[in-house]
Length: 149
Image 1 (tube, helix red, strand yellow):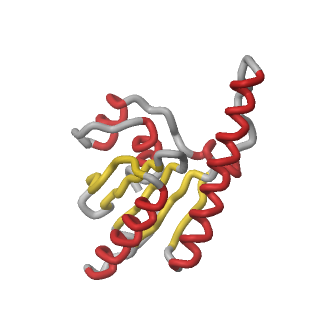
Image 2 (cartoon, rainbow, N blue to C red):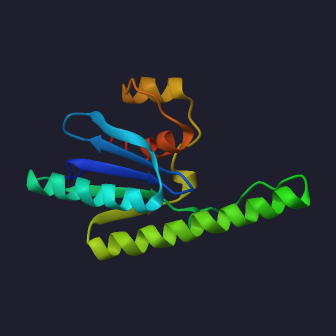
Image 3 (tube, rainbow, N blue to C red):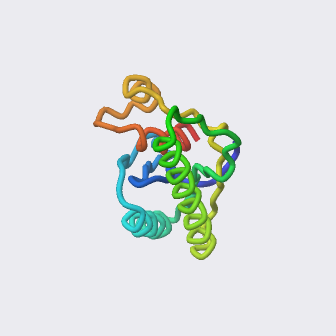
């Protein structure tokens, strides 16, 4: 993919929002972690400003659960109800992110879950990204949206 973006930011929606900043020029992870959605929005705005001050451009990629075509069923009614509620919450988060990114006028892409490799192990992610620090599943999912761009 040809692009003149310096910084790519991956966002994995959820109760704990996965957030990863990939520096395309340096080929390094500048930040990876999880945080609440309101903190992630402020953090994103700070990264956009930081990058623009240095003459760079940002591209944001958000995993969009609204584009998911299938969610595995749970074995009992209580778990199934929780699954549906969780799926609805993540879809709502995708709407919020899309509206926010549109308002910021930043270049962004909503990515179908099937187009992102998720649920990678820490060892696999470390080998791929060369990032040595600790990660969790949501942070790695955000990272997989942008690593190697």
